[in-house]
Length: 368
Image 1 (cartoon, rainbow, N blue to C red):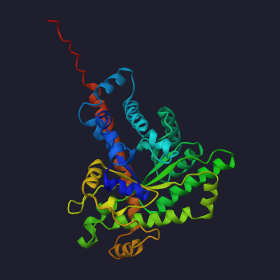
Image 2 (image 1 turned 180 degrees about the vertical axis):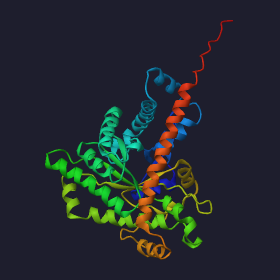
Image 3 (image 1 turned 120 degrees about the vertical axis):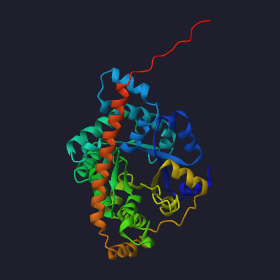
Image 4 (image 1 turned 30 degrees about the horizontal axis):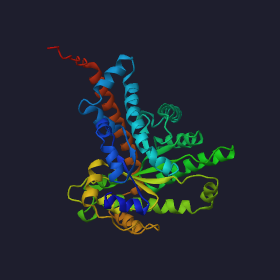
């Protein structure tokens, strides 16, 4: 077991892999990460699948078989994604069972084209979860204005939700409110309070967004400060009387998940965000190169303070530098939806290209 990753696991933080490819599954690499690097879950998104399906020929045979059945490009994608993610879910199932459902999850996102469609999101989430047939599969829904009521309804319906594209304390609290209301509604009608959810806060995109607007001494500090502010908000919520009532009824806490934790600045340590975001009862979903870098030369840092630490002074400094954090959070969420929608169009285009290429004939060896 790797010492660096085990240190975070012992702290109470769970490491998930932010990647999925067919080769990762068939080569045994994911199983090795589970066994050796304390990886206890996995996330995916349209960008990850666009790269996976567009690179190499791992999916080509499956695409041709599904196309022969008359499936649309979108239906082919979800069949491919579910094939991969249900296999991954089965690999994580022992972790899921041993943790009483707290860990061992994989995530599949609804179409980003539904980001402004509440009813469409609710329907898609229910269908995808039912098709997966795995208790440890999250459906990812963006925490947009239209996504929030869908999140509440899906939680009420018993669909586990990974709330994605959160960028600020306000975004996190809105997602938490949707989760709490969904659980409260279940309790009111006599349903189980045990429906899991995580809230995914994107970190490094903050620093990328302001890099050209600030002095070099301010670089790579904003995302971590925002994360610290959100962690304080989560700890305060979990200490509230409202949450204690739900916990007494059997509800699980909606954990914060640190997303976008790969370092984008080549002048910075490649393990910056993993080292800075260590906190009990949180999750860090890590790009594969960052996971391997941290395992090799990471330096687990100080535990994130529950009182927000230096977050507010740092945010005040950025405010004086002209950074409007709330306006930037709204912009980053809009840009996130657009980026995933672009990747969605790209991956469907890759499927369309591959299905149009005639399948290579199978050659049989001639008898001697």
